[in-house]
Image (tube, rainbow, N blue to C red; front, side, top):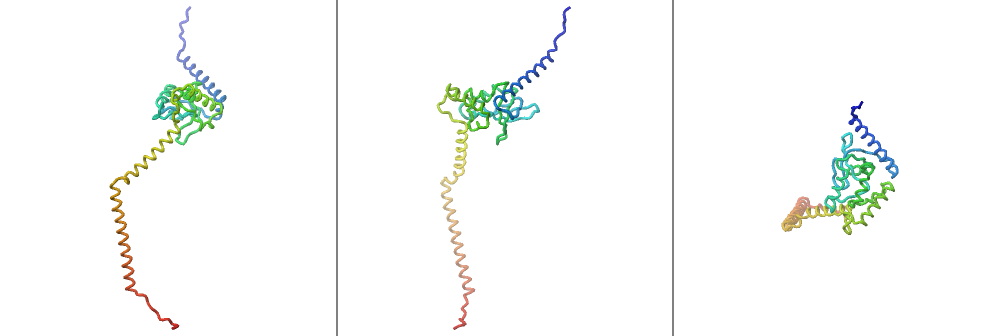
Length: 245
């Protein structure tokens, strides 16, 4: 007799997803312990937006949004060469996907500094390996030693292979680009503030202002001299006889 009982596919798929999630979590935690990430927090959610090559927005299971700044790397700004390419490459890896964020701290802009993991893949490291990000050596001290070394070696390899932004002989690092941009903006503000004083009308107005100031000073001096003369005439100094004479 043939058994026509059908397997419970929805229930089977449900338990399969749970088992997959559990195994992935165990593997990620083991990887974190091996690379020295002990003591950091683990945040899971879906990436709903990619701002640029090192910043994403994550929606967690409680429907809270987290701005995530990828730790240990610095990708080109959007206005820089390869900036858009870096953003697209990162979006291809994480946008719309469930990821795990190994969080360290928050920066001064309120962003969570984290390493993104898709399964067991280090997304931050993948950006460097593709030649679309620098190893942010200024903050290497905040990374586990093994991770910092892996990021540094990945950058050296990308340089040697002339991948992406390393096709240029001396690409400008994002941190230098941001400093130059701030200086240029400050100079522009000063230039705009000084623009009225560089016009020919200001020279004429300045002459008029000086005339008013000088005229006011002359009038004040005249009033002072007239007042002194008035008081001297009204109250002449008294001459007293010397009692000893």
